Amino acid sequence: MREEEELIEDTIAAIATPPGEGGIGIVRISGPEALRIGREIFRPRKGAPLGAAESHRMRLGLAVDPQSGEVLDEVLAVAMRGPHSYTAEDVVEVHCHGGPLACARVLQAALRAGARLAEPGEFTRRAFLNGRLDLAQAEAIISIIRARSQTGLAAAISQLQGGLSRRVKALRDEITGVLAAVEASLDFPEEVGDVGPEERERLVRVREGIQDLLATWEEGRLVSQGINIALVGRPNVGKSSLLNALLREDRAIVSDIPGTTRDTISEAMQLGGFPCQLIDTAGMREAADGLERLGIARSRAAAAAADLVLLVVDLTTGVTREDEELLKELGDKPLVVVANKADAVASVDEEDLSRLAGGRPWVVVSAKEGQGLDALSRAVRDLVLGGRVLRNTGEPLLLRERHREALERALGCLEESLRAWEKGLPLELVSIDLQGAWEALGEITGETAREDLLDRIFSEFCLGK
Ligand SMILES: Nc1nc2c(ncn2[C@@H]2O[C@H](COP(=O)(O)OP(=O)(O)OP(=O)(O)O)[C@@H](O)[C@H]2O)c(=O)[nH]1
Ligand SMILES: [Mg+2]
View (cartoon, protein in one colour):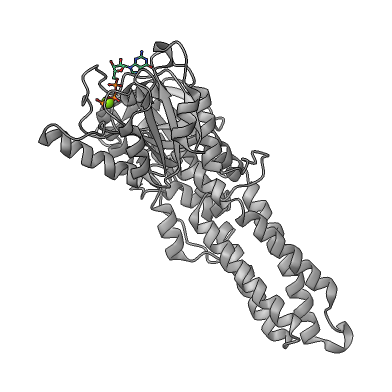
């Protein structure tokens, strides 16, 4: 539990499910009054009042207005007594029929019975303040909610289970040990004597530990934030068909008329294990009319802004001069040449393709038959990782800029203290920098996080989380 405790005395409530129609809609109530409020707005069909019997047990009954007794919905309700709940407080959840009005009225009833409307992330903030989760774990929940790839999700789950926190805590404990030795030798120089190579060795190991974690950032950033991939090429080569094939969905209009796609279309998907925004663009050519020219300007902008380009060429026409010019225009942008319509040709002129690609990766696919898409996905993966391999060993990955920044700071302080030590500067100076490193590490798990930092982090959450 953190030292500077916020006093939690009120009870909060919010709708925890997304707005709109759905199977169920959940109103969540947490705090010291949750059970009382739950009893006022929920009338069980049979048995003891809510919260009086077994904890965590779903009950069928009616949600009612606490004042008028009007029936609001037929619901399931569950009371979870603290500390065995999400927030570690008493929690009541009312599962309504998933209509916006039913949920809103049950929430109103809870507010009328004395709850306060929760701020975004306030339930999770309470879980943190009550010591149920540390800060890195709370942030993992955001990463889980936002995960758009298997790898990103797996990394976020491992973070929620404390993978990163344990690592950071172990590093911090090492520093604590050295700090204690340094302080002791400062306070009782006669009895303790000098701190020596052993302590310095420990700090060197901490430095390596921090560097190892920092080395996972590129990969963590990839799996959490993803990349933009633009489909670029002449008209009619099958860019939109490829988008549809990769999405397994009839998303973009496909036709045999060149210049079908006018505006860029962007869809989120996974390619090569990474989340990405796949952007279909208008076919590039010397534009015939003004509208098409506008579309082509957008294509250029999309290609320029993309992290990676899939340059689509048409096997039925073979590589053309325009393909070559396009490639030249794209410069040294990371790029995969995608030769499409393999189903429509008897053989593929590999020499021609490899000449065009000029050392860049190229793959042969058929958007129509869905052929070669795995190879395309592998090519993207290899290009993005640039020879690096995804660890995927269950080792923690840095998923947030905030963690990277705190680790950089910790590393800076640690190096400073090692330098001071080696120069034989007074131990007081060594100790100040060690403190800095210790505090920076503590920001990751939240032991030393300030209130404004917490505000910023928890405001990223959705309402009801
Ligand atoms: N045989 C065959 N035809 C394909 C394949 N992919 C696309 N086509 C056809 O090629 C034509 C153009 O496809 P689109 O996907 O609209 O091409 P595009 O590159 O998006 O064209 P623009 O939007 O005009 O730039 C359509 O008639 C498709 O059916 C393929 O893999 N094999
Ligand atoms: Mg198109």
